[in-house]
Length: 412
Image (cartoon, rainbow, N blue to C red):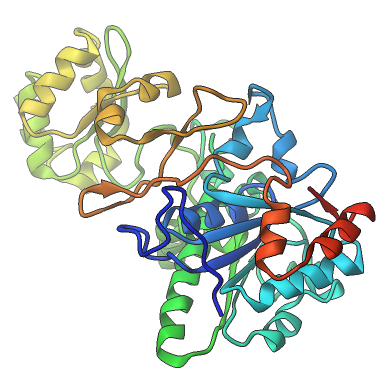
């Protein structure tokens, strides 16, 4: 039986744009990938119970700087909309408590190091034996099988092992890490998609299923067309800076006061670009008549365009190119993005009431329903903020809760 609770707005019925209302998720994950998955599910209406260590909580709480009034901004960005249960899984009573909670849950999400869930009696067979309707989702490093399946992993390691670092950076220089944790967040997104599909399947069959995702597989997915290219003709790609390897011109060009990303993705756009920058003669140049030729002569084409684009400011070129229908965008930094009118118009940065951060704003989901953004229903919780509440809902009486607290199994 799914145990329901009132949403943050006090409505205990079905909430518009909260399709997972009434679904309970046990979030036994740390760092970013698993928590990001659980945050997506929470924003879609699920009651997410974040299981944390009683002493330090999620590892991500200590990751920084930057901190915001003492709270890790990395933790804040992946844990909105959840309730925190501070519970020791090192203690058999803590593990039994979690199993009792799993009896009434819909989703069990875990990212424990490979093999640890089974060692603790929290593996898929043990948990689903008690609750066959449960969707059990594991977020791993290298995947559930293979010679590396028992090794741990983090985002940057998977950018290395999965080939991303080798194709990121400037030509002729060592590869670099992509500047955000896209492997973690991508894996979290795949996990959420898998959970949603499994819940939908459960509606048809009445039975839960097992979902597996991994950081390594996400990394491989992100280099999909590069893998296809290698399999086709043996091409091993390397860093191209801002250049898109299969299309030219498609890269950042310096302007008089900054830089502009320009995409001349086909012959029509290339002709429009040449007209907009006052160089129509390039269209008939035999070196640039087709995209494969432009890729072959990319350096010569880039040199000609760069000399012209340096003659005016980014805003002027952006206006001219946009008017001509050529995709272009100024190169913005994070501060620019935070204050951009487009960001404001989309309502992407969501204010959330928080006990110690009066001006807290966090990125909402990049997802809308019927024109309304999917938003977080509450701020990220303090460690153990909802321990007593969650256990009471699961049928623990006051004496049981007090005994668990006295022995350090929970933190309330």
